[in-house]
Length: 290
Length: 281
Image (cartoon, rainbow over all chains, first blue to last red; front, top):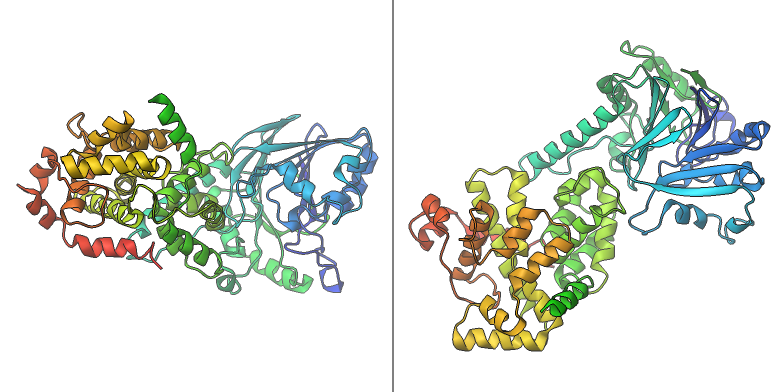
């Protein structure tokens, strides 16, 4: 299995002289399975450069798994060139939106409406199929198996685990560590604490022992208090998660749009001191072979 | 009878929430900094909101890997924002009128339901039942009489007749309902519970709260006792004042008569007041 990062930025694309080394595209991760199948995690703007590289593989068959439908995770989809080419088979997976009562296809089609984009969905030439997934519903893709679990973010967000020939990776999507909304002494404090432990245990069991953990580390510890409840992790929360579940390596993504290359270098330097496992701030073009 | 039931069950899908909670939900969901704890409380103190939300999160749409049993559980599992949005869309479907043609006072009814719920939870605490399970006692108390709202809302003229019979002949409400509808609020409530996918022990509790002698069940005994205490203390009004026998299991543990049981529970009025702030402006 090969993992390639095509977009590591959160919220909004951030091109410019200060983001050249880590990259300015929003979330997109390519996973190439051992038998050459293409799996794509999220369709942020990083999917556009990825699509250029996939033009060598026509006719293309690929599966795109959407963690959630916030812009920075779907914005690149209308610019994923293979959707315009006849003969390509594209499968798109994600959660049903229970608030809008719409499936993943409806939600994604909205951004192709004529007022937002000149090509209507009906005019796309590739064979595109949408599939709404239930929690933990496995999808077999060649020799790989993709499963999902709900994470903690303002909209329902799937984290995806991919297993292929004994190797495994997990991508959190956007995720904030659960915290108690009650204060010690409140009626529900203990019950809520128990619910959190339960949910954490389910998540830990689901991810335990993966070779690669890719996690949302949007904030520093200093920034976090002002952003609590926004649904993102911190560098420390990601490292804690990786240690808890015994990940063999941790890759950090969803960098803040204003975080410069120099700042990220500084943070990487601090993370190098961690002995339990290798921790790496992901950058566009980074490739991991398992 | 089956037709009446079917019609009632179908109509109840459109049942709106109580006016006070709708107001509070709109208020809380339009403030980005509102306290999530307040939203949880408002939802769990409205019989319509809580059942609809639990029904939705447990529906195949969500496709959750485990069954959600309380509002707090839902918040941990799917996040406060999703719960907030569900509450808003549920609450704004309409507002239950304060009055109906049956002359059944909705505010007084909600007060009776809430006080029964609160007293049931007080019992659960005295019985050292874990907070997570104590919530089931609260919910059963909140929903035990929900079938009455269905009658008042959808068959107001017949329900008016029921209330009249209770007043004039001193019959238990459920017997008067049987005479007019061939079914009663406990049965309709339990059918709703089934439709709303509530846990089985809650459904049984709603169904048997006037017949605690039918089977041995702590939750039924507790809700039945809480119902009588709410009537004895006249906190709200659920259509009748008649006090039924307190289950033996409750007498054995809490006191020789109704007053002794009440005294053993502490300040019930204060507890009910605390519950009420979540549904009042």
